[in-house]
Length: 106
Image (cartoon, rainbow, N blue to C red; front, side, top):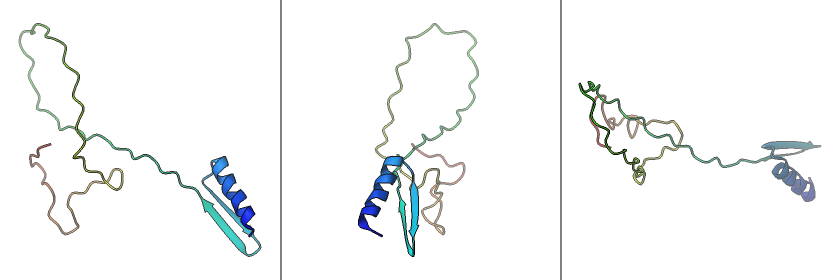
């Protein structure tokens, strides 16, 4: 296949927004695939349920409005190579990071 034809096919894929094209010309076959790097999506961890609190008997006078919550420091965040993947242990035969019911510090 001619180099100019390949260049035209590459331009076609880039301009049209299609993800893949395959062209067969005689015994020659070419496939052009375009992948767009998707921005990683991170979900915030779900907070543990707080114990139920019984309501106060008498209402308390309104206090000053609560300050806006501080932004979380994600400098020590662990990123998974796949979104939605949970690793209970560092390896298949290794001990789990934590056990069910164990208290952990965040």
